[in-house]
Every structure is written in C-alpha cells, then in structure tokens.
Amino acid sequence: MEVQKIEVPVMAEMFAKGEHPEYLFWVGCAGAFDDRYKNVTRAFTKILSHLRVSYAVLGKEESCTGDPARRAGNEMLYQMQALQNIERFEHYQIKKIITICPHCYNIFKNEYPDLGGKYEVINYLQFLDQCLTDGKLTLNPDVLTDTSITYHDPCYLGRGNDIYFEPRSILKKITTHFVEMERHKSFSLCCGAGGAQMFKEAEKGDKEIFIERTEEALRTKATVIATACPFCMTMITDGIKYKNREEDIKNYDIAELIVQTLNI
Image (cartoon, rainbow, N blue to C red; front, side, top):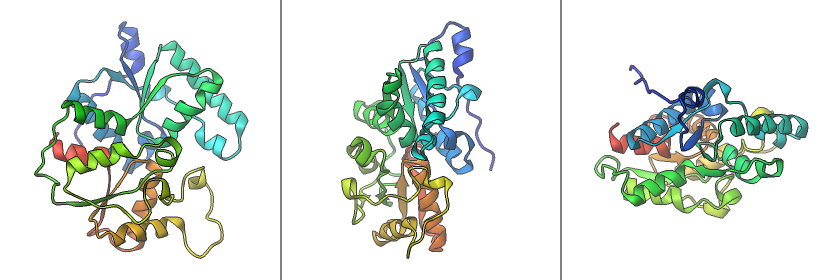
C-alpha cells in the first residue's frame, strides 16, 4: 500500500521567508527513526494539516533532547544536547512546543527551565482533546464506536505530569466500549522501557514487566490497546507478539485512532 505523502513545513525554510509558525512540532527520535512510530508522526501531522495549524518541524536540525543520556547518568552529555537545543530554539524564537513523546514533553517542561529554556510545552493529547472540546475536530462516531479499547498510561504522562483526563476523554469520544485495566492512572504499571531501560539488557527476574503489563491488557478483553508513548508502543507490541495475539489484538497510538475516525 502506497503511503500518502504529507507536506510538512520546516522551520528553517519558513524562517527564511519571514514566517514564524505558532508551534514547533518536536518529532522526537522515535517519531523520526522508528518505522512503527513514524506512523504516529504521520497521523499527527495529518491532523495538524487538517486543522490548518501554524506549525513547523526542525527537520534535519532536530537533535535528541538529552533525556536518555540524563536517565542513564551521563549529565554532561545531557547538558550539551539540551544547551544546543535551547540555542536553536532561541534562534527561531520558539515559544510553544508540541510533542508526541512523553519523555520529550517531560524534559522540556520540567528540566529545560533549569538551563534557561522556558517554553509553553504541550503534549499532543492535551492539544487534541482541546480541539475536540472546542469543536475544531469532529469525529465519525460510527467507525470505532463498537470497538473495545483499553489504555495504558505512560509513566511520564501520568505519574510524571498528571495527564490522565485527556487521553480518556478522547477515547470515550471514539468508542462507547472503553475499559480500564486493573492498574490504571496513578497505579498504572510501567511498560518496562522508560528511564533508558530501552537501551540496556533486562535485569534478572521471573517475568519481564512488558509481559506482565500486556497480560493485564489482555484480561480486559479489549481488541485495541491504546498507547501514547514510543517506548510503550514498542513494549506493548512486543508483548502482543510474545502472547501470539497479533491477529486479534492491535496496538494503536491515540493519534492513529483519531485519524481512523476522521477518514483523512
């Protein structure tokens, strides 16, 4: 199937023409390089284009936020990467940043200010829920209304930044069959790959965390497990494969579910 080409505005090109987009859309490492999460980037850019939002990406100028380096204990590398980003943001006079990664959101919002980088940082779920509330986005209620969906709370959205309402508000507009896992919201179980765990070998134990969490999701009998983080998507997808349930259980990001109901 041919992938639809999406024209994404680039900050340097717009800046050269004297244009100053309202938002920087920070794609993130996974959104730029991970084949599965590229679909989430495409989905969100489709929505931004559909809404005619004034935004741009850094493109080849985008680097890592430094979050994995800091979580792994390399403070020097983190500060080098962060200060480089802050300098670039100042050059482009960036005031508002939208992210699709909870780790990028958290570090921009809570840790960059210590280095002088102060911005209005918006997680894409906050943005999307506001658009739905304001009537800017109208979903087709017939597409997924009978689909049973459960939601896995990313640590850096939930416990880290208290973003529990928005994802559930969106999902309840998509389906009439939203079901919670046993552990959810502030009691949610981690997917197992945050805090730079994605880049190291598993530690000794009886069961991998992602398997435990996938089993919880499967017990809900939902046919879709919704996620909102690249690490969570990777781990939950792996869990579904480990349980040999790829045929009947799907893992979608919330932005992908919205696009399905918009038919864009």
